[in-house]
Image 1: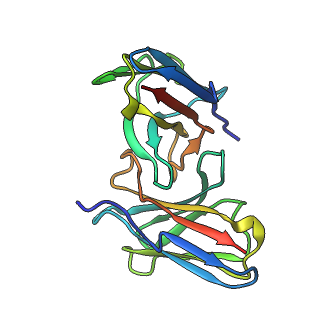
Image 2 (image 1 turned 60 degrees about the horizontal axis):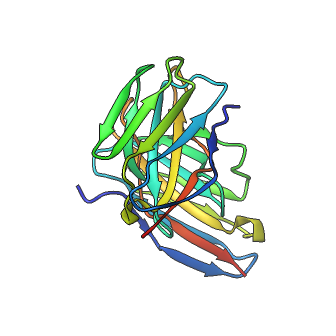
Length: 113
Length: 113
Protein backbone atom coordinates (compact mmCIF):
# COMPACT_ATOMS: atom_id res chain seq x y z
CA UNK A 1 0.00 0.00 0.00
CA UNK A 2 1.39 3.37 -1.02
CA UNK A 3 1.22 6.05 1.66
CA UNK A 4 1.84 9.77 1.42
CA UNK A 5 2.78 11.71 4.53
CA UNK A 6 2.21 15.45 4.48
CA UNK A 7 3.80 17.89 6.87
CA UNK A 8 3.04 20.03 8.65
CA UNK A 9 -0.58 19.06 9.22
CA UNK A 10 -1.51 22.62 10.18
CA UNK A 11 0.24 25.89 9.38
CA UNK A 12 -0.74 29.40 10.39
CA UNK A 13 1.32 32.29 9.09
CA UNK A 14 1.13 36.03 8.59
CA UNK A 15 0.44 37.50 5.20
CA UNK A 16 3.70 38.14 3.34
CA UNK A 17 5.62 35.25 4.88
CA UNK A 18 7.09 32.35 2.93
CA UNK A 19 6.29 28.72 3.63
CA UNK A 20 7.08 25.21 2.48
CA UNK A 21 4.95 22.10 2.85
CA UNK A 22 6.17 18.59 2.27
CA UNK A 23 4.84 15.37 0.84
CA UNK A 24 6.86 12.20 1.50
CA UNK A 25 6.57 8.51 0.72
CA UNK A 26 8.65 5.37 0.66
CA UNK A 27 7.01 4.47 -2.65
CA UNK A 28 7.78 5.62 -6.16
CA UNK A 29 5.06 7.44 -8.09
CA UNK A 30 4.72 7.88 -11.83
CA UNK A 31 3.39 11.39 -11.23
CA UNK A 32 2.37 13.55 -8.36
CA UNK A 33 -0.38 16.13 -8.26
CA UNK A 34 -0.96 19.02 -5.87
CA UNK A 35 -4.51 20.12 -5.20
CA UNK A 36 -6.05 22.88 -3.11
CA UNK A 37 -9.40 22.30 -1.46
CA UNK A 38 -11.75 24.84 0.08
CA UNK A 39 -14.34 23.79 2.71
CA UNK A 40 -17.36 22.14 1.09
CA UNK A 41 -15.75 21.96 -2.33
CA UNK A 42 -13.79 19.42 -4.33
CA UNK A 43 -10.01 19.52 -4.77
CA UNK A 44 -8.79 21.86 -7.50
CA UNK A 45 -5.73 20.78 -9.44
CA UNK A 46 -2.73 23.11 -9.09
CA UNK A 47 0.03 21.19 -10.84
CA UNK A 48 1.21 17.79 -12.03
CA UNK A 49 4.88 16.82 -11.79
CA UNK A 50 6.13 13.81 -13.69
CA UNK A 51 9.92 13.84 -13.99
CA UNK A 52 12.27 13.26 -11.06
CA UNK A 53 13.89 16.57 -10.06
CA UNK A 54 11.28 18.57 -11.92
CA UNK A 55 10.52 22.09 -10.70
CA UNK A 56 7.35 23.91 -11.76
CA UNK A 57 6.36 27.46 -10.94
CA UNK A 58 2.83 28.80 -10.81
CA UNK A 59 3.04 32.50 -9.94
CA UNK A 60 4.11 32.55 -6.26
CA UNK A 61 3.94 28.75 -5.93
CA UNK A 62 6.96 26.54 -6.64
CA UNK A 63 6.56 22.77 -6.83
CA UNK A 64 9.41 20.28 -6.78
CA UNK A 65 9.39 16.54 -7.43
CA UNK A 66 12.17 14.58 -5.74
CA UNK A 67 14.86 12.96 -7.85
CA UNK A 68 13.64 9.49 -6.88
CA UNK A 69 9.98 10.44 -7.47
CA UNK A 70 9.09 9.59 -3.87
CA UNK A 71 8.60 13.06 -2.44
CA UNK A 72 7.57 16.57 -3.32
CA UNK A 73 7.45 20.04 -1.85
CA UNK A 74 5.34 23.14 -2.35
CA UNK A 75 6.84 26.53 -1.57
CA UNK A 76 4.70 29.66 -1.41
CA UNK A 77 6.39 33.04 -1.56
CA UNK A 78 4.78 36.07 0.07
CA UNK A 79 1.63 34.27 1.15
CA UNK A 80 -1.71 36.00 0.69
CA UNK A 81 -5.00 35.46 2.49
CA UNK A 82 -6.35 33.92 -0.71
CA UNK A 83 -3.83 31.09 -0.31
CA UNK A 84 -5.75 29.82 2.71
CA UNK A 85 -6.99 26.28 2.18
CA UNK A 86 -6.19 22.58 2.42
CA UNK A 87 -3.24 21.56 0.26
CA UNK A 88 -3.32 17.92 -0.81
CA UNK A 89 -0.66 15.95 -2.60
CA UNK A 90 -1.68 12.86 -4.54
CA UNK A 91 0.45 10.25 -6.24
CA UNK A 92 -0.33 7.98 -9.18
CA UNK A 93 1.29 4.52 -9.08
CA UNK A 94 3.83 3.45 -11.68
CA UNK A 95 2.88 1.07 -14.44
CA UNK A 96 -0.37 0.62 -16.29
CA UNK A 97 -3.78 0.58 -14.68
CA UNK A 98 -6.38 2.93 -13.35
CA UNK A 99 -3.91 5.55 -12.11
CA UNK A 100 -6.03 5.83 -9.00
CA UNK A 101 -4.61 8.52 -6.79
CA UNK A 102 -3.28 8.00 -3.29
CA UNK A 103 -3.78 11.18 -1.27
CA UNK A 104 -2.02 12.51 1.77
CA UNK A 105 -4.08 13.91 4.64
CA UNK A 106 -3.25 17.44 3.59
CA UNK A 107 -1.76 20.57 5.08
CA UNK A 108 -4.31 23.05 6.33
CA UNK A 109 -2.90 26.52 5.69
CA UNK A 110 -4.26 29.67 7.29
CA UNK A 111 -2.86 33.00 6.15
CA UNK A 112 -3.65 35.75 8.61
CA UNK A 113 -3.94 39.35 7.39
CA UNK B 1 -15.83 22.70 -20.61
CA UNK B 2 -18.27 22.88 -17.74
CA UNK B 3 -16.27 20.80 -15.29
CA UNK B 4 -17.34 17.74 -13.30
CA UNK B 5 -20.86 18.08 -11.93
CA UNK B 6 -22.25 16.17 -8.95
CA UNK B 7 -25.80 15.95 -7.70
CA UNK B 8 -27.06 16.38 -5.06
CA UNK B 9 -24.55 18.56 -3.21
CA UNK B 10 -25.94 17.51 0.14
CA UNK B 11 -27.96 14.51 1.24
CA UNK B 12 -29.33 13.88 4.71
CA UNK B 13 -30.97 10.55 5.34
CA UNK B 14 -31.86 8.15 8.10
CA UNK B 15 -29.79 5.09 8.81
CA UNK B 16 -30.98 2.13 6.78
CA UNK B 17 -32.21 4.13 3.81
CA UNK B 18 -30.79 3.83 0.29
CA UNK B 19 -29.17 6.80 -1.43
CA UNK B 20 -27.99 7.42 -4.99
CA UNK B 21 -25.56 10.06 -6.20
CA UNK B 22 -24.92 11.20 -9.75
CA UNK B 23 -21.73 12.38 -11.44
CA UNK B 24 -21.49 14.04 -14.85
CA UNK B 25 -17.85 14.06 -15.95
CA UNK B 26 -16.17 16.50 -18.28
CA UNK B 27 -17.48 15.60 -21.72
CA UNK B 28 -15.35 13.12 -23.64
CA UNK B 29 -13.38 12.12 -20.54
CA UNK B 30 -13.36 8.35 -20.70
CA UNK B 31 -11.97 7.79 -17.19
CA UNK B 32 -14.20 8.31 -14.16
CA UNK B 33 -13.32 7.81 -10.51
CA UNK B 34 -15.21 7.83 -7.22
CA UNK B 35 -13.48 8.77 -3.98
CA UNK B 36 -14.67 9.18 -0.40
CA UNK B 37 -13.35 11.83 1.96
CA UNK B 38 -13.97 11.92 5.70
CA UNK B 39 -13.16 14.79 8.02
CA UNK B 40 -9.44 15.40 8.41
CA UNK B 41 -8.49 12.91 5.73
CA UNK B 42 -7.57 13.06 2.08
CA UNK B 43 -9.85 11.43 -0.48
CA UNK B 44 -9.73 7.62 -0.64
CA UNK B 45 -10.23 5.73 -3.88
CA UNK B 46 -13.45 3.73 -4.22
CA UNK B 47 -13.81 2.68 -7.84
CA UNK B 48 -12.78 3.43 -11.43
CA UNK B 49 -14.50 3.26 -14.81
CA UNK B 50 -12.97 3.35 -18.23
CA UNK B 51 -15.87 4.20 -20.51
CA UNK B 52 -18.72 1.96 -19.28
CA UNK B 53 -16.50 -0.75 -17.78
CA UNK B 54 -15.88 -0.79 -14.05
CA UNK B 55 -12.26 -1.90 -13.95
CA UNK B 56 -11.19 -1.47 -10.34
CA UNK B 57 -12.87 -1.49 -6.95
CA UNK B 58 -11.33 -0.72 -3.59
CA UNK B 59 -11.77 -3.00 -0.60
CA UNK B 60 -13.47 0.04 0.95
CA UNK B 61 -16.38 -0.61 -1.41
CA UNK B 62 -18.54 -3.02 0.57
CA UNK B 63 -21.38 -5.05 -0.91
CA UNK B 64 -23.76 -2.26 0.02
CA UNK B 65 -22.11 0.01 -2.53
CA UNK B 66 -22.68 -0.23 -6.25
CA UNK B 67 -21.59 2.05 -9.06
CA UNK B 68 -22.61 2.18 -12.69
CA UNK B 69 -21.72 4.09 -15.81
CA UNK B 70 -24.21 2.62 -18.28
CA UNK B 71 -23.42 4.63 -21.40
CA UNK B 72 -19.90 5.66 -20.61
CA UNK B 73 -20.99 9.19 -19.75
CA UNK B 74 -22.59 9.94 -16.37
CA UNK B 75 -22.14 7.62 -13.41
CA UNK B 76 -24.20 6.78 -10.34
CA UNK B 77 -23.08 5.56 -6.93
CA UNK B 78 -25.69 3.84 -4.79
CA UNK B 79 -25.39 2.99 -1.12
CA UNK B 80 -27.92 0.55 0.25
CA UNK B 81 -28.91 0.27 3.92
CA UNK B 82 -26.83 3.27 4.92
CA UNK B 83 -24.85 3.18 8.15
CA UNK B 84 -23.45 5.94 10.36
CA UNK B 85 -19.97 5.23 9.03
CA UNK B 86 -21.08 6.10 5.52
CA UNK B 87 -21.23 9.78 6.45
CA UNK B 88 -18.61 11.44 4.26
CA UNK B 89 -18.03 13.57 1.18
CA UNK B 90 -18.31 11.50 -1.98
CA UNK B 91 -16.17 12.92 -4.76
CA UNK B 92 -16.19 12.14 -8.45
CA UNK B 93 -13.28 12.86 -10.78
CA UNK B 94 -12.73 12.43 -14.48
CA UNK B 95 -9.69 12.31 -16.72
CA UNK B 96 -9.03 12.23 -20.45
CA UNK B 97 -6.08 10.29 -21.75
CA UNK B 98 -4.11 7.72 -19.83
CA UNK B 99 -1.65 10.17 -18.26
CA UNK B 100 -4.05 13.06 -17.92
CA UNK B 101 -4.65 14.51 -14.44
CA UNK B 102 -7.93 13.99 -12.63
CA UNK B 103 -10.41 16.84 -12.27
CA UNK B 104 -12.80 16.72 -9.35
CA UNK B 105 -16.38 17.77 -8.82
CA UNK B 106 -17.52 19.55 -5.67
CA UNK B 107 -18.79 16.33 -4.16
CA UNK B 108 -21.93 15.12 -2.44
CA UNK B 109 -21.88 15.45 1.32
CA UNK B 110 -23.80 12.58 2.92
CA UNK B 111 -25.03 12.83 6.49
CA UNK B 112 -26.62 9.81 8.17
CA UNK B 113 -28.96 10.57 11.07
